Amino acid sequence: MSDQVDQSRRNMLFIAAGGLGAVAVAATAIPFVGSMFPAADTLAASKTEFDVATVEEGQVVVIQWQGKPVFITHRNQALLAQLDGHDDLLKDPESKAIEEVSATWLNDKNRKYRSIKPEYLIVVASCTHLGCIPLYKPSKGREEWGNSVPEDWVGGWHCPCHGSLYDLSARVIKGSPAPHNLHLMPYKYKTDTTVVIG
Ligand code: FES
Image (cartoon, rainbow, N blue to C red):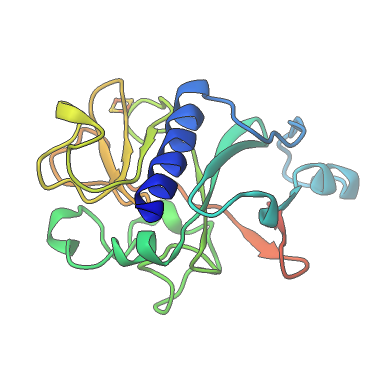
């Protein structure tokens, strides 16, 4: 019973997060001026620091980096387990597309998680079809989400604009109009929980 209550409570937080759009925690949006030879202060300004420990287990928050919305998702063991067994449903299960080249940390050991630390997924929060912000729908099946997801829904994100679906590693599901997985970005951990994006 308590597990059911906890799950329900977490899902309500998920729904609130998806519904509000800009959610919970927002780092300062910092303008980025493109240049062939950017000054050191410009390079510094293109980076955003964030303490991932502030994201509760099972939740997602949206921050901004270079004016773009970014999802930071804290996946617990149950959510990580939902990544298994559906590679055949995905357009690019191993994130081999050219769009991933900016994620220099991506390697054969972390392709399923698409993150440096499996529990923290960090992706650009823009659908790769036409840029809408997808809604977080982490639980499997249709019980909570109705017909917005398929019967065999594996949990992840649903784009409300034209129906693209992504799993819990933000890998796009076949049949979606979106061509690619949600984009990754360069980042590294400055401390055990402080991530520097950019
Ligand atoms: S913008 Fe997401 S499906 Fe079209």
